[in-house]
Image (cartoon, rainbow, N blue to C red; front, side):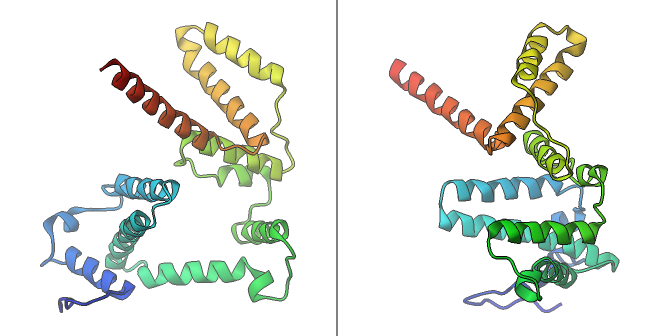
Length: 233
């Protein structure tokens, strides 16, 4: 296999070739030993690091982290290319077709005058593509691998789109808190889980992200702790 030359700039095709070389018999022992499951958490970590770069409004870091995410995508695609099931070009082709199909107001004859209509068009196309016709279809299509708070809020949103309101009365939230505080050892986890879900549902109704809110509170806790330690030093 011909090695890529030193260049002033590289393309996606170069990255695919580099990863193919790393996975070849003459490549890197570590890269050859990996499979989808062994680098699953790497994919998550790199994605979260890219999100952190977005949160920090750091374009230099974001460029680097997006590269790390892209590497993970190319690695997974290369593993599949080795089995003959699909390759990176198939991945690109699939997402291109999806973008065209889900934007008939851009690439077809339909129209969308505002953001709401564009989003509704996207959702309608998605439901047709995936056969999401019932509430059960909508709920089961939410990935179980999402962070728990994010998954809970997405389930609430899908329930509302399916015609089932996810609103809960405030009394139920207060009762759930009391139950969690007084639950015995066997029921404690389930009681706190119900409380967290109800809080997530309430925040979803208010248009707030439970995941982001908890993340920001964690940041505030760190700053508060560090500030207290510095004042005591």
